[in-house]
Image (cartoon, rainbow, N blue to C red; front, side, top):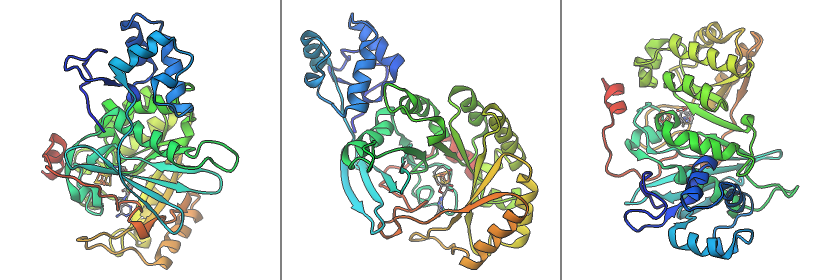
Length: 374
Ligand code: SAH
Ligand code: SF4
């Protein structure tokens, strides 16, 4: 994945060709206007790239020959470079994508009967340091650019076979790979615009899920900018325990987080918010924990998704026992909370939730990492 500065004009100060892959319609229309072309060229190019899987301008036959030649000089459509691809016995596929300079991020495709879900990364590593997460343990290097985020979807759609009904393989996208999407807000929004645009992927809002550990101000911004489905990594029902497991809680405690969630749900006509809850043995899995969670979420537009903890090297936690997880689920359900248990997929290739590590070199201490550590 090549990164080029956002500020670069179509010709580029450095003489580099500009990668159009990460440009949503408005930016692409500006680009064509700067070239002296009509803005509707943007829609044509979006359709070629994201719907017809074409990257070579020469093959975009509804553009004039002259324009095609000009585009070849000043622009390109560059997909991320896959360093490796692994397939799990259960059909899950995991790719490792280069993020330049010996850095890499992971993307996972989870095929199911009724959908194909792509779990994408938004950052190289993560600064938020949740104690049970392999990505957090890696530290943080940098945000992914828009072309690097959307490129994961483009690549998977081109690489995988179509669905049995002929539809594109990726029907759902979840921001549950490496990184905290709301900490890369600047690049998240254009990526969501491309996923939603009828000229690009045309996915509906309910087929796109942003998962966050709770960067409250950006939850509010997201509800105005692009209110897709929201998943919130709650994992604890008391501030004392959540401060320990999800350190961003020290900055945005549970009451503040939930207030933002209910505001978000209200703007989406009370569509449910999914609360993720990782099941950690003897840490957050008692009947008392379940009752505290019920107190927080009952009679709200909330669903709970219990995630069996996925172990990784160097981590001390254990997954709750199967019986404990089903008892926990039953307790929540008895009090009217829609509660599911996430099926672990791709564990044999370390592709399950929280196991994505990629390659994070040259960790940097971001403002966020300083904040959550203090
Ligand atoms: N940063 C975002 C999205 C990426 S993590 C977030 O935290 O929500 C995606 C989900 O995997 C989150 O709910 C996260 O808490 C969960 N997760 C992290 N480590 C895990 C592990 N080892 N086992 C199971 N789930 C884990
Ligand atoms: Fe970051 Fe999410 Fe992992 Fe926490 S769980 S460290 S926010 S990726």
